[in-house]
Image (cartoon, rainbow, N blue to C red):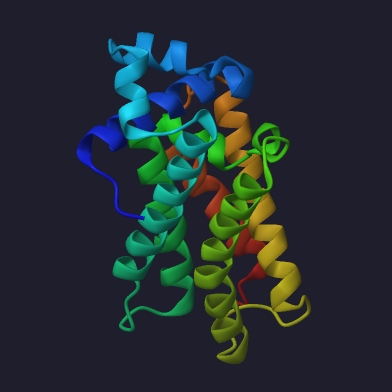
Length: 194
């Protein structure tokens, strides 16, 4: 889905509102107020609140896929790639904390089937980049084979999600890159074969 610069502005503002006030706080009226637009100006770019949320989630999925694909290097071993994958995510969210809502989008899931499909798309993008890396690492003896790649994927993604949730609950007061790097090292302590 191609978005214009103005639509990206609207999406970012929607992310800020969602992060601060949740789904119920995101209204076209509040969005127009946040952007200092008229409500009709918002409707020129999006038909509804649902369309804005779908565009936000689609933007995140596409952006994540592009960033993680670009950061992949065949010259790095799986451990280095694992670290880089998560550092990339932490760096993005540190610069864009208003998008954290999509990491733990429980409140969004009640909104519509189309939104659920977009949340699933984000999860699929994460799995697309993480699971093959874990499988390659297991195959080459870098990561433990005592736990299946599927289970490792869920454990790692759950840990990331919890870290982001704690950051949001702390109102973004700690440095997510520093704390994220600690978490990365803890996971590697558990899964990396010495």
